[in-house]
Length: 355
Ligand code: ATP
Ligand code: MG
Ligand code: FE
Image 1 (spheres, protein in one colour):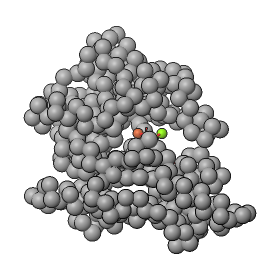
Image 2 (cartoon, protein in one colour):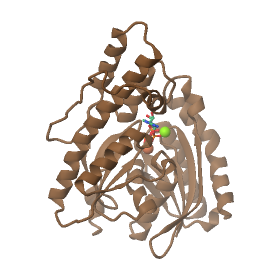
Image 3 (cartoon, rainbow, N blue to C red):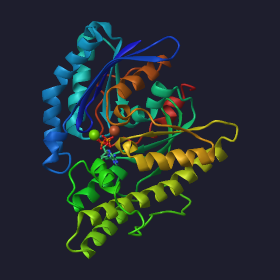
Image 4 (tube, rainbow, N blue to C red):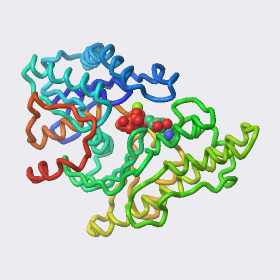
């Protein structure tokens, strides 16, 4: 089974060709991603209208390039998978409409994929993780702890009640005058900082529910920066290090509870896994915290390679292949993009297929 994947939900235009072999493993024949970072960085964040136009400009060429790299023509794919939500509606329209047009022109089935499902299933492609497992998605737009029970069967155990974790990094960077995107800049500054200098809040720590909150942390960072004048490079490093420290402690508590709940839910599973996805997964401090936590709880920690943690089309292609392999139906060409689309919404519908 060979599929063309298309991703345009945020600020990456991406196309991929992935083939699933009979034994369930997969071969990535092409994986092309065009980041719009340069177009948005002057604005300090993603501008939806610029993103949509950039997807229009790039997508056709990227799909051509993916086919060329795979050494095939469009006729040689068995299906087309396109992200249809959640995300910026302009970008989603570009990708999904392109997918529909290609499906219509070739008579191939179209799979309209939930972007979050793509993130959730990636670890099965890269590491062969088996159901059920826990997935932590930490990106610029999402912070969710999800129980992945099967293809199409997800339970959201926790989510952020305000900012996403990547967003907290980006806003903190902006407050401190560091460049966009903020995550890598904050991490770099933190490397030479004192994590104990500022006692930043650790929101929701100790609470039984598994949600996250990061907006108070951002406010505390602003107050810390305002309390010092002028702010030196060392001050910035100390603030960044203290910020990361607060995040590590928060994740330790929140995710630790999640792992415990997984144990209680599935006592029979002896080697469970926690899978991480999203751009923040690149952060060494975050990784180290999760890795250590997993070791303490007897979980396997699975972090796919960075280019498959951030937005890409391989994960969209793979989600389509997982559906095909289960014999799940393709989508009608009338399917509409959805800017909001909670991952657990369609769970019951797909569970009816018994997997
Ligand atoms: P989505 O729509 O899935 O949320 P996104 O484009 O917002 O997509 P990603 O591309 O997965 O998210 O990740 C980008 C985010 O990851 C940004 O907020 C960025 O600051 C953060 N990030 C990247 N590298 C690091 C790092 N080293 N440390 C912390 N955060 C990082
Ligand atoms: Mg992105
Ligand atoms: Fe994403």
